Image (cartoon, rainbow, N blue to C red):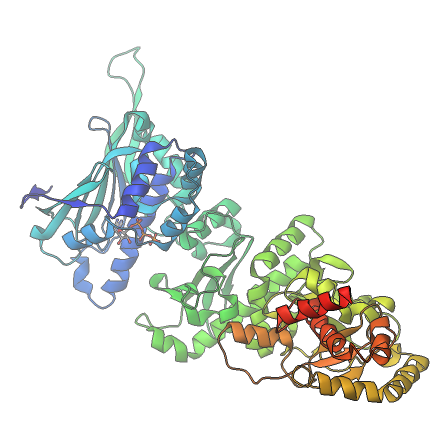
Length: 638
Ligand SMILES: Nc1ncnc2c1ncn2[C@@H]1O[C@H](COP(=O)(O)OP(=O)(O)OP(=O)(O)O)[C@@H](O)[C@H]1O
């Protein structure tokens, strides 16, 4: 037992902690029992940390290497205590870690709070807020701890009633590790019932790889005859969970609920995963993979320093979080565990980069994730299909990065891509679907990139495709243009942007159309020259097109120039790009174009208006909007 050494000192909680505690202590919880999951999870993390530090410093074990988590109940004092013999806390650790919010998951949670107590309480129930969840059931928490390897005299006692402050004092503590003592509220006395606590541990924490122990209960007959017997607590410890790392167990012994709980434990995501893949891989490199595909993108998915990668274990010893070398960057949304049988226990991040085993594991993981996604995408089952839709809505844009990043799997990734098209507003058309509905004589897969669905759908460039009944894929993700730069064909069929270069409809354009276009180009040569001269600051050149039906003109990029979309994206990213002017294509059949030939007086204004309107049709502003308006107004009044 512990004795006090120094007087206690009072500290204030960080403002966010006070805010969080106010909510925790003043709300009614839909799911109060999650406090146990959170505290057992912390105890397990503390043991993992000791195992890891112990690899280089066996003295930290203090001759006791049997790591375990113990839960004890004291009906008289009304306390529930969770004790671990993990890494423990120094006094400073206790001040720093139990007085501030470190966990990004908790910050995430705080940002989701609505201010509506009922809704927020529901959120805590699902989410859990780490250590502070203890205050859901306790009106006072005492933490007693000693850091592994520290002298007995350097134990610490941290006490708080869950309001603005906490006290910290130095104590003597023989046992290494931490005890979290919950002084239960009157309305939380059900957690003094051993049977109930066991149920909760089974529900949420069965996957924890350490033994979670409680005193065994045994039936005792009554001492006097005709009196009822009762369950009594013995002084023998009993392990109440399976106590083997979940990924080491055979698949058939693991329920969906257990997989889901495990996912929540490692990811801090409160939504169940969409799918998982669990395999023991044998061969030149041996490892176990347990990979999860989440149902919801984290907020930091696109941040440069977002947490990526998997937890790495070597022969069940925890080595590191976020081992980014185990997955390519475009699969950074995947969560899970890799347990390698071959890597050395002292493996460092630097070593991981060079290891052949790691390369093999990364390739294996990539294959597995892509095939899991393929299964969902191709499933006949409506629920599985819905899962793929959810996946794609959350992570489709990230997956596209793989087209550029992962040459070896480019074809596999291309099969998973989905787009809206001129025949479907829903992002559901695959390249294969597209190919299956190509019309006779069609030789390419046509696509257009634009800022949004409306701009894409109404683009003048699509007019001829509509007229001929040719489907065009509508690509509206910022990354599409860039990714498509790496994908020139799909299973032998070339991909062609309808906004780049001259439209080449190949066999789809009949001879009469071709001839008509050629003769128009010849006839209108003087007009084209004049337009080019007038618009020399805006357009690279001006030419006749057959792609337009209802619109007078459109802008296209030259075959080898950056498309306007990509140019815009690079500009937004602050990158310098060569200045390239678009080509103005005009529709010789359109009345406005015809007017150009006859109305010399308004030629200049009309030429500029036609150019600026082509910009507007692409969803862009004319370079001088006021000049544009003046010209239009003058013409309206003229
Ligand atoms: N049993 C324990 N032993 C040692 N340290 C602990 C223990 N419980 C909590 N801590 C310390 O307190 C910190 C705060 O715990 P909390 O549960 O609020 O968030 P967290 O555990 O950091 O979040 P995450 O679960 O994302 O790691 C932990 O990071 C850890 O340093």
